[in-house]
Structure formats: structure tokens, C-alpha cells
Length: 99
Image (cartoon, rainbow, N blue to C red; front, side):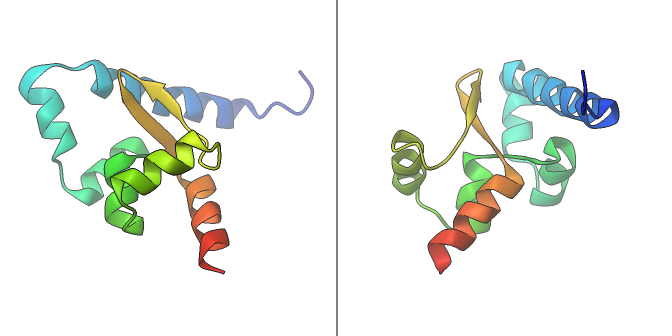
């Protein structure tokens, strides 16, 4: 394929595998991941944020996040019942709302 950056693709696949592994983990391990400190979660998820990250970093309410998803303003994908958002896309969207 023309224009495909293989290293970027490999990085994306690795990040998605991490998300899938944590999203499908059960019991205490999943709970520990959900409540890990912000720095550790950011390192693990890389360029991807979940609802908790949006609430903590942007101070968006749960209903605001849901409304933006529902209206198609906030792009996301779902794995294991959790929604994930590309960090830079979210920051661009937040900047647009701030203006």
C-alpha cells in the first residue's frame, strides 16, 4: 500500500492489543487498571483515552461525553463495553468548543 507507515501501524496495533487485554481482564486486575494513577494509565494507553480520562483531564461530565458521542461529534470505538477516544482528536475537539 502506498503511503502506509509501517512503524505507526505497528505502534497502533500494540496500543490496541493493550487496550483489549485490559478491557477483557476480569476481577481485581481490571479494577486495579481502572483505578491506577493517571500517569500509569497514560503510559499504558498511550494515545487513547477512555471516559475516565475525559472526565479527569477535560472536566467533562458523563452526560456531556455521552451527548457528544450520540451526536457524532466525538469519534470513538468500543471494546468490551468501554469507549476509547484518540487523545489528539479529543483535544482538538475541546479546543474547538473553548473558542
